[in-house]
Image (cartoon, rainbow, N blue to C red):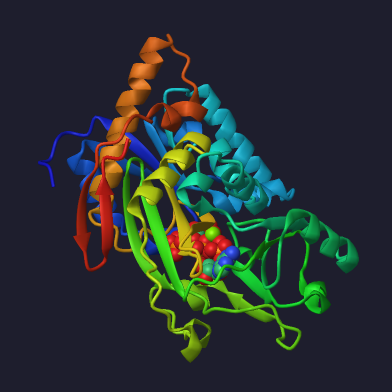
Length: 366
Ligand SMILES: Nc1ncnc2c1ncn2[C@@H]1O[C@H](COP(=O)(O)OP(=O)(O)OP(=O)(O)O)[C@@H](O)[C@H]1O
Ligand SMILES: O=P(O)(O)O[C@H]1[C@H](O)[C@H](O)[C@H](OP(=O)(O)O)[C@@H](OP(=O)(O)O)[C@@H]1O
Ligand SMILES: [Mg+2]
């Protein structure tokens, strides 16, 4: 850790209670202080103008934005106050800009971005076929699936991807008879057999860390199987021990399922260009027949579980963003474009890797 300097800048922080309880505040404060920042916890119920000047706004507001989007009056007021405040103070570096976060709140939106990326297919990267259901009409939904090439088995996921427990409640459906279990608005996606291994990639600006997690075993379409309801947390967290992750004996295969790190870097570059978040993560499974890499999820400010030196990396990234913000403000007079700060951080890549038992960490992707 670098030596202590007097605080010259302030980071205003707001996290949901769930996130806040998991955050190591002591370490955040200590590392921030060592970079010359004081930490102030913001109270969104009080006017932000009364809470002192800030240089950086660090937040996880997914649940509030999601609630505002469905018309919750308190959440709408909070979000509109924050947006007004940030627009009155264009020099505050926002991690991450609310409009960029909004892209990831809707699964259909981010799967569409992935599907439209022209460079992916030639490198064996894809997002599994998907469709959105907005009604309970099973016949109509079957037709939508056919048109979009979505095949059984499917995973039915809530369209709203973040911000509540229900956003992570999934259903595996094996045949058209059971399509009626899908509750709109939801996205259905073709299931990709991947031998129950999930690769999670956590990103902080131009740094990333990859780790493996348990996932779902292999399945095929079937008239006999009943739908399986599960929550992501029960199956895909580091300590999950679900029977859904135990491979059937005939699934033991000698096909090489190697994650191509070049592909991970390609995906990161695309996400930075198209979505522009500093704090994000995405999930990849490897198709056990073709070896192609399927991106099945993108997350805002994820857990960063086992990310080496998380806070030091976060503060380095904040430093870079603040310095960039000052330069951009200087260049433009006083007019900083908030929604493009992280996009302007894009540059070309210079990579150094270190492998560890906990995963693989890539540094200085630009
Ligand atoms: N298309 C797919 N093919 C195979 N398995 C999938 C697919 N989509 C999702 N899964 C499985 O379901 C899990 C949950 O899906 P997904 O990642 O979309 O949900 P989530 O709740 O947004 O997850 P997270 O908690 O990581 O945000 C995945 O980790 C994976 O095990
Ligand atoms: O296992 P990960 O780090 O992917 O788990 C994340 C999850 O993917 C979502 O990002 C959660 O956010 P919400 O959807 O807003 O609930 C994260 O929860 P959080 O409490 O850390 O914000 C999970 O960690
Ligand atoms: Mg997710």
